[in-house]
Amino acid sequence: MALSESFISDELHPIDIVETLAEHHAWDFDRIGDDQIAMAVEGQWRTYSITLAWSAYDETLRLVCTFEMEPPAEALPGLYELLNHVNDQCWAGAFTYWAEHQLMVYRYGLLLTGEQMASADQISTLISAAVLSAERYYPAFQLNVYGGKSPRAALEVAIAEAYGRA
Image (cartoon, rainbow, N blue to C red; front, side):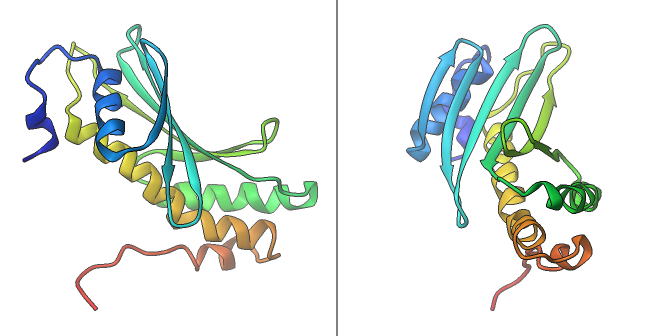
């Protein structure tokens, strides 16, 4: 059964759908308010903090996926160059580094203008894509910042999508 089949009403709030998905996957979550939810999603490399917020004003479901990173000041120019290369490879969403909070951030906004509704499958894919992107580039960020690898060399270790079976 598709995730969307478990929702009967067409008028569900996007954050209600996210909460149901979090319960379904047994993710730790906190419903911060009517329009925002925060959760922890376990990845291979680490646990990612994911926040989704609904803005009725611009009809956008915003996703922010973060993990802590404390690069030394001398590593920041290389990290910013690496971020540019990584974002060139990202088709949806983008990474940034919030130095003030020492957080690596993946952001994406799902536009739902014209009173469109997000499906559970769409939101599930949105969350999965964020975690998969963070997992894919995490080793490159680590090698660049802490391993002293150049941005290009660090990017070469980014895990490519696998096709087929071994």
